[in-house]
Amino acid sequence: MKKLILVILLIFLLSACKAGNIIYNSLYIASIGFEKNEEVYTGYFYLPSSVSVGNLEQTEAEDATIAKVDGSSISEIFNNFETSSYLKMNLKHISSIVFSESIMNDANINDFINYVKNSDYFDYNFYIFVTTDKIEDIYKVKNPNNENVILTILCEPVTNPYTYLSAKPIHFLNFCRDFYNHKVIKIALLEAENIWSENFDSVVSKSVCFYGDNKARCVINDQYNFCFFNDVKKFQYDEKDLSILFTNYKCDISYFDSIKIKIRSNVKFLTQPTSIEKIEEKIKSIILNLINMYEKDIDFLNLEYNNAFGKKIELDVRLEEI
Image (tube, rainbow, N blue to C red; front, side, top):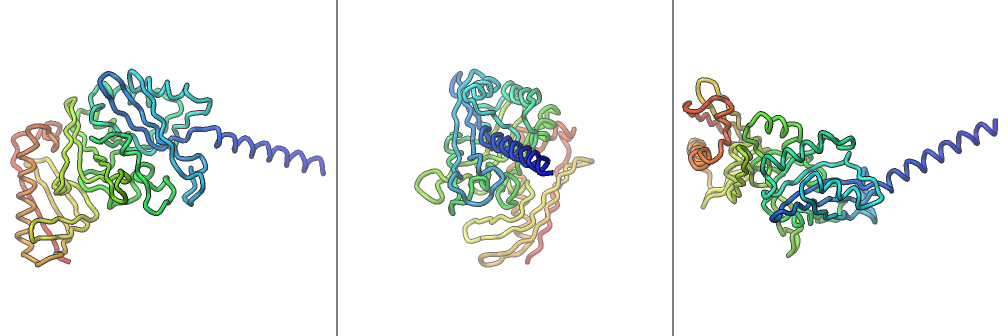
């Protein structure tokens, strides 16, 4: 009986050691960014400490490391990174992929998708972002209270519903579906900002990138106007003496006999209130101006995909004051 117990304990210890070795001998990559400078592709691999993976509490080994690898293509970057260390590259924990605007063309996107599809170790459960900033600046993100880096936007893209104003993060599988169906894809745009210090330390997503027809159009909107085409939990609109808080904002677009854009939201006046009707007309004006400004350059309403060119645009905006 004692021998049996010793054998069981030995098996347990060996299993525990093996599990520990898997953790400490793996590179747990949370996010990867790609950019191109002339003919050189660069990949940035955002690696939280292996101790931080699965641990939301503050630890001594909580800081992330950024590995920088060059290559002649996106797929070669992965190969070069994998052969640069004796540690195993663990791709199961990737939460986000960040493409620089310089990467955004069909050839590079196909290269990336094919690598993911043919990889035995890549998990498909991550989100796609675009940035016009340097990838290095995006990966300088920190939490103001020194919480674990796992809690940052790069590692938890969909946790906070208030993070994204003009576009929601798009899942990799949805991105592939829209890409191969030749739709114009709306992608959340990441921007590096210096909020808590003089250096870049934060990442925000106020703006949007539209990708289609082998080109990207990134629209940096200080006034967050493209948020009027997005479902947003809460955002504030300011103009001169007018300040309004929108909550539970919903935008629905249908393409039947006409292009019908239906808007529903609660509003709260933070300054001197005005009539709801005036705000409804203001939203209609903003939406029509955006369509006139951008639709000819890039079909962000996907009129071609929905066979809706030439159809009448109808706006149905109804707000409720709270």
